Length: 80
Length: 119
Image 1 (cartoon, chains in turn red, brown):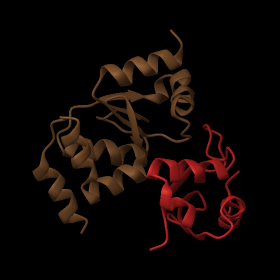
Image 2 (cartoon, rainbow over the protein chains, first blue to last red):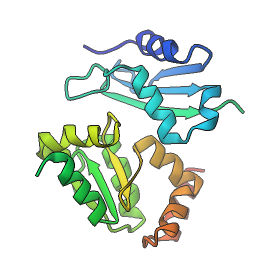
Image 3 (cartoon, rainbow over the protein chains, first blue to last red):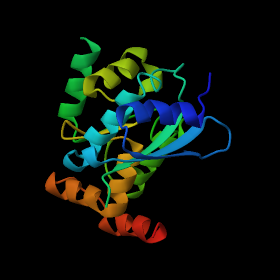
């Protein structure tokens, strides 16, 4: 079952309440997403730690061949 | 040997390892294709592991580094990142520096070409 942009944003929002989150449907097929997450907490993390934290917020939705999220391109950074 | 032991042995006995869907000659996913394409273009000698060929490794590599997606790039046994991180590092020049620091051969000229065409 594919996910909607709102569901993706809401999962990330639970973990990063103050983040600027932008979700884009990159292929227009409801199955390939890009998420940009800008959050102050990223300032002290390297990229791997930042993305690991976002993946954790998605609570297993990325996992496995039957994961609800097939393709999610991630951009993470701290505010300028 | 357990999947975790196999992975540890693979990433520590090869300088550059890419866990990917498909092979470097025939990637089977856009994200894997992008990273393999960068490494191929930069002339980096790397070991490719096709996770589609082994279900234990496919799950095992996600557990190994607590990272839920494929591809995964390792240099000298250290996890570097997935396709988004590798793309950013290629464009910023950080990937060049990582290879320099680890004495991995690559074409600086090719890396500059990638940056020029994505500027």
